[in-house]
Length: 181
Image 1 (cartoon, rainbow, N blue to C red):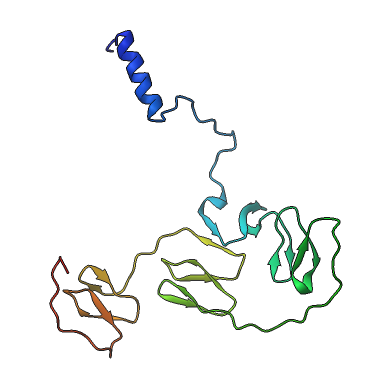
Image 2: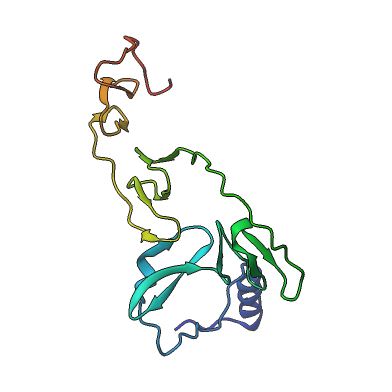
């Protein structure tokens, strides 16, 4: 083992500290085994909890209140209006009418989520009910190779030099593309 002079050691320590290197070991809890939540991605406003040995996506810090989830520290005072308030605050007893709203179309990779579902994994085109989890798996496109791109499902390669994909009966350009295009 090489022995460094005092000034060389001081310089090395200064460089390591400036670079943000820490010498503290990572303390792992004794129950540091991988949990079922390690492979689950929960949707917005939910977090993964292990319940009965299974990964479950549950609301973050709050309770469901009509069409929303109350944030931590708030309580649901009127579910028909999706109204959350701080504990002890006044709340209306008004009953809010349910207004049917056309859900937005949600593009999820090569898929479109049906009404009432949300995209949880665009690489796989996986749609789930709000609050449900899905895997963190990365799906590799499986369509035809078209130059440097891969065509989505249902599309065909019409110009491989440009990487242009179209529907099977779609129009296609006859131009020639190079790497600089």
